[in-house]
Image 1 (cartoon, rainbow, N blue to C red):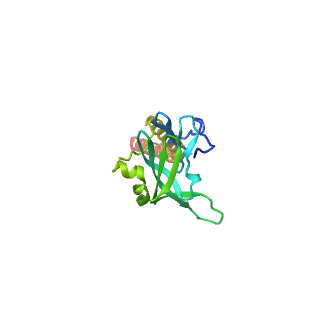
Image 2: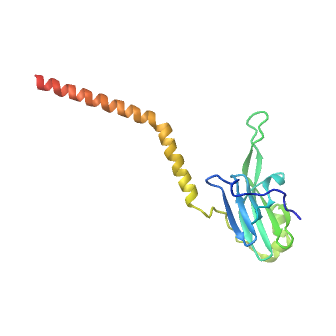
Image 3: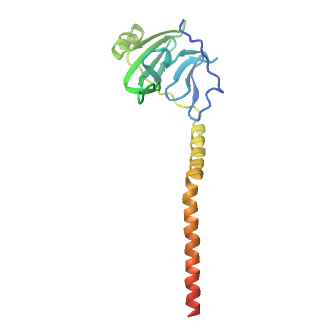
Length: 185
């Protein structure tokens, strides 16, 4: 059995772009950040976690049949910007594949494309139509982005607004003074 002893709670995934996507009555895709797109049960127990496999990254596509779930993931690699940098990045040049047997939650993989296509279950199906996981709540990221934009304008825009206001006051003062001189003459 390949179930990981970790779990996801809705409160843990609180980012604007994070989500839980139901892909089968018993399974969900959990997005906790751009690198951690995982497969798990509806109760939050995780089956596929990128950190549990040496070079695999987030799930970028899936396919569900009555007996299996197929995953396509990207790779991940160390960033190494400075000594001691432990951050990892998505490596979109590499792909890995997994096959989950829904009868016993046995997760086979990671496979290369050739090994994946040679897997007996995959070979018996022929072409697989991949589905890209997407946030089922499209409004939340849009609202989050809007809030971020408004805060950014307020925080970064006040100096520009202040400068425009000072210039407007100076222009009006100069113009009224010029008009006053015109009336005096």
